[in-house]
Image 1 (cartoon, each protein chain N blue to C red):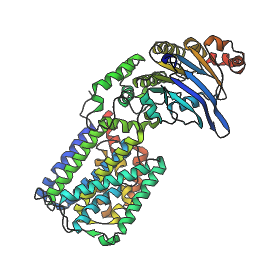
Image 2: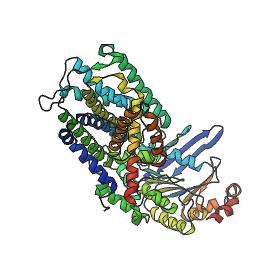
Image 3: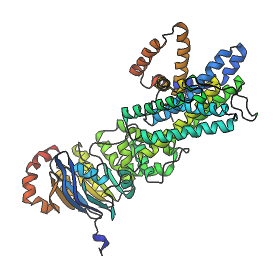
Length: 315
Length: 259
């Protein structure tokens, strides 16, 4: 057994603890802004973690993951608009629609590989974007305001900042735990095997695409949950949230943190969104700093933050 | 056929596969009987690997049929053929580089142990998969290297692992595409000894350049040239076949000097 105490695990434990205690800090200092910011970070971390499942473990470079954020969000927004406010209905619908979309898109996209797969997932996500823009009943391009957050029959109040934060955090930890179970399961071994060498996996008896597709659907469903959370967080849903740049940001978060590491996307999202927050206070051209930073990470820190920490542990 | 023992395990009839204008497999017919070790030899470019790839389903033929264990498998995808008991090793090592030796073999065992839509339990802790992997690794002499990542194994060890992976699928027929390729003298000898053991348990089709190994191991030999069978028979018949001598064995000394 290798020692469990190393730089990587210490950082992960500290970050997890920090996330758990954040509302306490916010209450003690009266800093409400940090709680709002981190609610957003936690939701995006869940989306990034779901993308990492197919990108890092499955080797499927989906460039259309923002579509699920939109689908989950629109499911909540549209149902709320139509007077159905119960989360017990909204959220399962959000998940089911995301899964269905992933199933259809996946079945078509997974016939291709490499750059073609990237382009086709991007194209489908853009289609979803334009469809959302065309929903004139639900605000079209301008988007849709959600006047009332999802209700859960008095179990939990989503308008309460702290309760909502902990709900998001529970979804994140639950999602990461689920992904951890999956990647170590028989299913996860097959998916990673296919990433490593598809021909070999076929030769020993696995129908590679079937496993890929199921993985794709699981990932999309988890991201749909992030979409439902995000809509509740912003009280607003618009096509802009599913534009391709958003998909790109999710990819950057995963790469920042470390593709194919369980907790990497969480760290990547925290670093990315905090940097964005801090840099944008100095200059509106914050992307000019973020871009080269990403380049440095890709060039010199393969495996992202988690990769760096791993090397630290071994040193 | 009345005598089931005489029925071939693998029957290839009139197989054709061309790439552009070149016929890599040219109206090829071939039988493999249960229990035999059938070697396929031929100079470079004779279409040996193309043939193996059609047998396992990585390539589809333009015409002709392939029957395995009494079933027409000509159009079955490779994963289905593997389930029927057809296993191959690759000429150019084809393993999962990010995984350990034991993982590679355990996955092969897993593929033949029901479906893998199991999302919760840890696969690496499933004892019977690990034991099956360990058994196959022991078989090829890699037991002590079980937890070493494939990328850190030597070339010879990777060749042995190829074999262990194929064995873990519990095949009826083992298609070995140049298992001796790139092996040193002692490694080759070990591989020959290993194949001598394996042939007692499983039918083997062996594609190999190492003539010494082929003549030491084979029950029957089929000689391919430009995708066509020019001779087929027991080692003695092949050794004395004039056409084979002319077409192929003329450069035997070149091949043997490698090994």
